[in-house]
Image 1 (cartoon, helix red, strand yellow):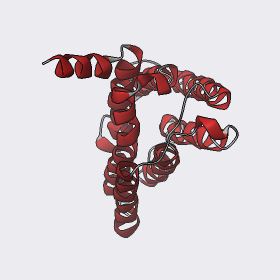
Image 2: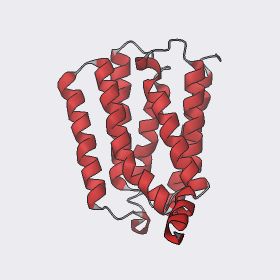
Image 3: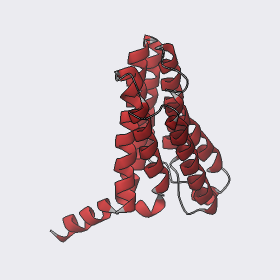
Length: 200
């Protein structure tokens, strides 16, 4: 375990990653999927509120808050450069609807642990379009924000003193999805797989 104050370092890394992504979005180098980034802003904020309701401290939930705040800034930035927006597909809309259903289920249950679970589900469904995009066209993404997000999640997990779902569930999920997208974008793994499949 590490000192819980390292969570501030993790939050700062999240912010740095978001700022780098925002800059590349404004320049048109990255093309954020607005469905994903809107819901990536919404779901963590719900999870953050649910965590506070379950007795998690503000510091303990800081990474979750930042995971929502960063995408909110990215979403705003996507309206600055109209050319930087990824075209919304039927798949994106379906994922978005399913994600919002997850949010609705949280609203109905109002139970902390269940709310966190549905927030993770909603966030994962919201992330599917970007995960697919990273697989098919990694050049439209920037890996730094996802790498720093994964590092932030590790820091949060190492600084957490209570290992139950309310305290570590969202951080563990963020580590998994951020690492998956980082690997797909940084190493263009999906492109290699598609090339191999086409060669057969």
